[in-house]
Length: 146
Image (cartoon, rainbow, N blue to C red; front, side, top):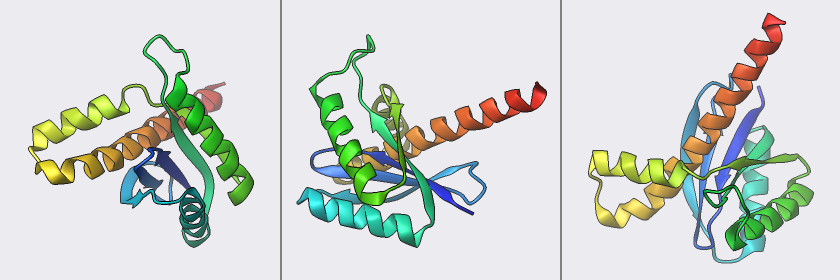
């Protein structure tokens, strides 16, 4: 069954998460280190083929008032290029609180500091995907009730 891939884009690291085959839960994947964007596209393209990915959810950083800042514009550009490269749907997902929740989860777990940045990216990607999956499931249940 096709899966969904979530991406938490960053200029140094890219957090990744994948849905389970039923589209219920999100599991984090190893973080990609960004050296050159073409290499990142190749790695994501390989992952799409290998894991039978049908759609990509890309975390879109917005300001707390809902406006788009410079980082959001970079993510939009990355997503547009990625969509052309992998030829599957790339959907943007408001990620305003995912990093805050990731840091909170790590504080609660008291992880080692040097592992923290990579774990934040992985957890953020998982939170982005889980929020997306939960919303889609809720919408499907509402449609079934009609």
